[in-house]
Length: 464
Image 1: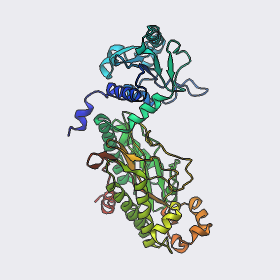
Image 2: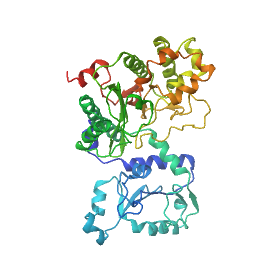
Image 3: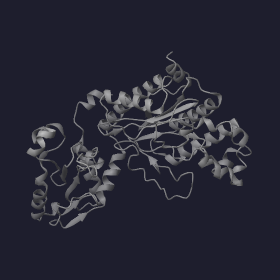
Image 4: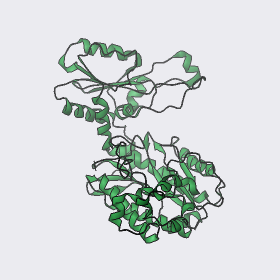
């Protein structure tokens, strides 16, 4: 297998991605030809300020261009298979502030495209293609809500604002070698950052210090952007799934849940570890940690090509119920009985994982948030996971009054919950373990190497 460095020495495969998207469109509309049209994100100003907002490229545009420049455009002519990138021209008044922009020659050298023009050339190109009146230029495909007011498609006989988004998002599910290499690199950097936090945790006084450790490591290794806002949750804060404050004191708390991952060239890592602030797991925390570890290990082992994601999610709940019965938090029923009642959702309320790629919660999972079944309502992937997809596997157990108390008030669920035993676990807060898994022809590959064995975690924290 080629190394990450050797793969990333080449260009991001924008042309290959454009051809995949065009093939998907052709499959849906066999007789149509024309132009795929995409716009990059615009420069946007902070309200009541002369500073620009932090820039984040539109992910579907990046997928077909590899270009991270604001105010750019892209066309792909399906008949000629010509991919053209349109970049902002030189604005002399801006050069003294921001320097010279990327030239057309530099862009052609940098990106996997056929031609580079200026953004002022987009409309003339579209008008020229449409004016020829050829059947090969009869349709323009664009994304609804992502076409600037000054752009005109008047010359095209068909204007499709629906299919392109579907095509790109379906193609983004299965990653090529270059995309996998970017996710590997993001994981490598984030792994080092997670380990750095573990080494620093005994000396830290506040969650924000540990977030700073994580960010410092990522930025120093060339990953200045995080894939999402880090979750640095100590003690009972970890019972909030997407805790954001990251500013609580660490004193007298058992665990730290660190859900954090950098983005590398726009591709995400998404890693969670939970570990003891003192360097040693308390007895209640260790029982919960070991159960979550078992849930994750067995769910990862169940992954193979075209596995039903719902079935792996159910497996996680089955293991959870069996473990909580053994611990004593659950009582008075068999695993399958409690599973049917969905009482385990009180402790594991979210889905098992999601696709990972250009977005942390990547596209293509077809979640059904309107589902009234509480066990599947927040499952971000529905259906089967194909070879080449990257998924997160992130089971968790949480002790959140807001979630659990309604179950305790409902006799149908309360009969299965031992409140005396549960009382011993509120301060554990929450435990989640999350890895990034590549689905392979023979099963899976775990792209995440952050330590999660109890002994290894404690040794790393204690400097042994």
